[in-house]
Length: 223
Image 1 (cartoon, helix red, strand yellow):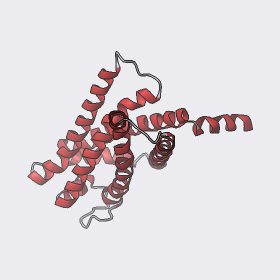
Image 2 (cartoon, one colour; image 1 turned 90 degrees about the vertical axis):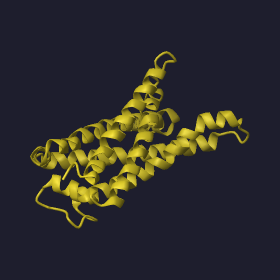
Image 3 (tube, rainbow, N blue to C red; image 1 turned 120 degrees about the horizontal axis):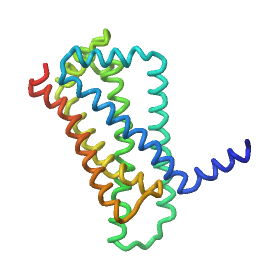
């Protein structure tokens, strides 16, 4: 048992271990945000459809909280491993760097290390706002999710913050989705351009789908 734990610990302490953990947790979180968006888009089907969806989730009881706890753990592990990997790469970086290589190799990762914690902070606010009801004066605790979403996004600063966060999420996914393949050692010069385009397409779909809700509410299409 001890030797297995030690091998696992050594694997995690290595760069490849951290990359693998980032890839796995990243895949879990990407699947979640896609599913979350699909669920939220039921708002276009009307109050009854969205509230029925919310009630089905609520009826899961302890299982729902178990899933939430698992997702929270995935977020924490993803951020911690990403920061540790970034610090390891920074420490190993030679003092003299060719400018072109610096831009190509580190610009995306430097941006990811900033957008990640910002998105984590937004997730906390988003949960407190639309799940718990904090920062939401018109929150309905009777599980009227349709009302809570519409009333919440009628606040312009809240909608703007959400749209900005979705833009950051889109960029994060556009880079992270294809880099997961590299981290897992599944990259190939022939297929990586396709994977990169698919990652960008996914990021755009998430951005457009998610921001369509506050925009539709502010425009009066959803009341």
